[in-house]
Image 1 (cartoon, helix red, strand yellow):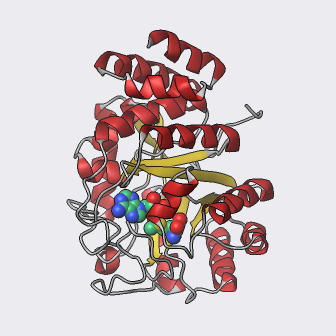
Image 2 (tube, helix red, strand yellow; image 1 turned 90 degrees about the horizontal axis):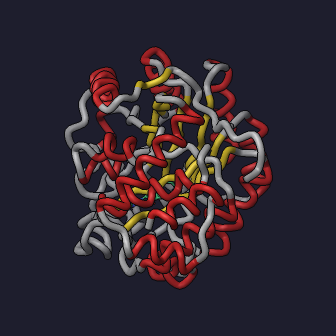
Image 3 (tube, helix red, strand yellow; image 1 turned 135 degrees about the vertical axis):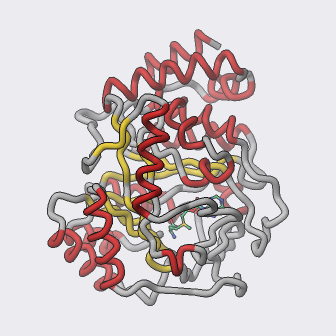
Length: 349
Ligand code: SAM
């Protein structure tokens, strides 16, 4: 195992069969070895800083019907909401005062927000907070629309590829969603110049080790600036409501692998990790993560962005949540930074 880890750190890549061996042969000792290497690398690029992103879940209306997702179109059991532009800008204002320098606008694919409305929102946020980055996470769109938002000032885009295996992708989504289009979007975003994030759920129904290896190879090829991974967590009103949740242990191991593959990547310890395990985000940091995305969505609607069971459980007000995060990060030797937290990549790997 040590030889494989050494090779992964040196070459930033392994063959399909070596990745399989690493995943299937993992144990506590190899995980500790991996995490030690991952932490050294993250500290070489980012020191002990933890970058924070203020997450604004601005609409839970979605035209898609992904089988795993609580805000899927055919879930009639949740109330739907859309924040107004004024409400979104107020979230940013409050976030700015607390020290956020990146705002993530995330939502379903909602025709209630035209591409022009989103462009105006981006422009308004950049005008109010010129020292901040804006990240969009609003699903699949045409290259022209992505270009329009980039020109409006958007800096980053998060679009998880969900799974790099096409058959597995089709087993998680209805026929109206295609793996080809998802990947086309990611390539367009990269080419336009966004700091681009892909990612996947760990333990999604039907996922096998070879699918995870395909994910790693896809990521190696795409060279994203950000990778979002978190455990799948069932949501009771979806077709996958009875499926088991993904594993924390495997998620952490994959975070470590990703840090070795892309030493300068922006790697969040995701909310899903913190939902399944109260110390999940601290463990994520110890495995090589360097980003957290606390929620700035107004309390009145937050419960309705119900992607999975238990999301947001135990969350407090925004100020208290941030001081709590600061304390938890300091307890494991890291510090929350007031910083845009851009990717420090200089050359292509
Ligand atoms: N609509 C946008 C998109 O498709 O990228 C952004 C919102 S979407 C709800 C954000 C992410 O939530 C998805 O990429 C998916 O990986 C994650 N997600 C959805 N349902 C989940 C679940 N049951 N467990 C864990 N993660 C989930």
